[in-house]
Image (cartoon, rainbow, N blue to C red; front, side, top):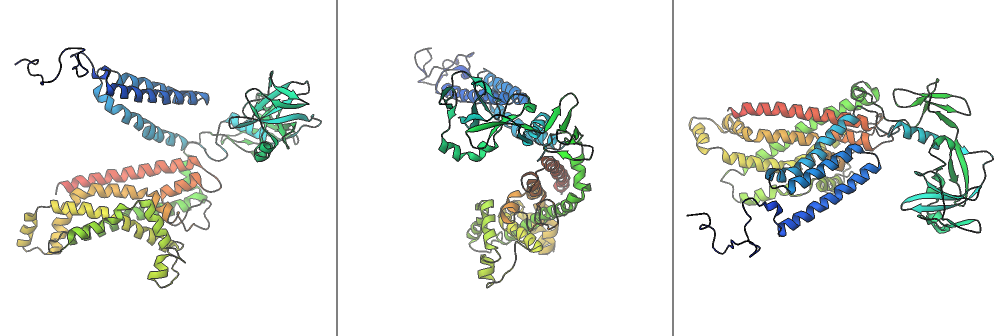
Length: 538
């Protein structure tokens, strides 16, 4: 029978007679115009639109690496999804792109930052630091004229429009130096209209008075020439820094004292007396962030305490959740217990609550003065569950056990039911008691299937930021620590505190700690999986 004869009845074989026409052997489904093709066309068009927007946004701020990546990604997406072949690539490309952006790029960038002094006071480039020093240390130029001025707005950016001494109108913002405009409208020595800008009324000026008094509009691209400022939004004056930057000598000079500041290897201008100018700029510091964790007396003390508690918390969490889960799994695996399905359903209820919400509920229940535990269960006692160092650690472990044992209960129940009953029965007939059967047969066979899950649970609890942050916030804090860390902080919450809390944010040190966490978790997982192979030989 030929292929033509074996075609399903009701399918039209002539081209152009129906939309159900089967494609020719060399005709690709990727180019067959139909509802699916139109949906794909719209989706790819949306991806292209977002990609082109990203290209323009990244190029505007000079991030040429991102521009190159987006261009390559757009080319790949269009080639793959309009190709006649590349069927596997159509499924792999989205995942690969997200993998590159959210995994590989993040890892590489974190590694890069860990070798720099990136943080408060060293956020940007040397050019930005020079401009910031000049702008932050300025004062009004003596005998400078008072110039009629209005406040203008371009989108979210505020600026000044000023009538210069020669009568021209110039406009500028914090990012755009003053530039003369031709078509501005001036009535009675007051600027009433500026092309491309909205002139703010008096009421609008009052609403943003703080931003206006802080605003500095540079006179030109050379920051040494000074900037235009105002105190009332109607009269402007020229201010100039009392520091002067010499580009040829790469020095910053204080015109009042004559002190000369030279750049050092740590990204700051420093004079001969060791005084630094702020802000600085980002520079490579090698392994300084890694060594600071162990050698800097301000950090190492808290760091070692947090490391010890992190290992203890992760290990005890695995032990307690596995122990409680296994106990209930063995109990409710006994066929003599009636209503086992009901009990099993009740036991997995904690697993149904979102972890962060449950942590907040427990935080309220463990409140020292108004919590349910103290007020109701303990008859009005005042037990500092979350403010005492050791009770807070106990509370964290207790709540984590409550949250985690249902998961262990489920996997242990499944693993127990997979153990052949005749093996246990044979051991019992040989005279082995319940404890011997459990220790020598049930537990080893159980660990064969649960050991990889225990390793992953250890890794999860090693980075269990949500529970710590929601329940105790890492507290109670160490009283003598220079950084905001406490008794229940684990490494990942300490990283968060260093990067985003406290008076000084140190992204370089936080990134170095993140790399250390990655190495520790990877090493422990490697050892755990090697041990798992040994169990599989049982």
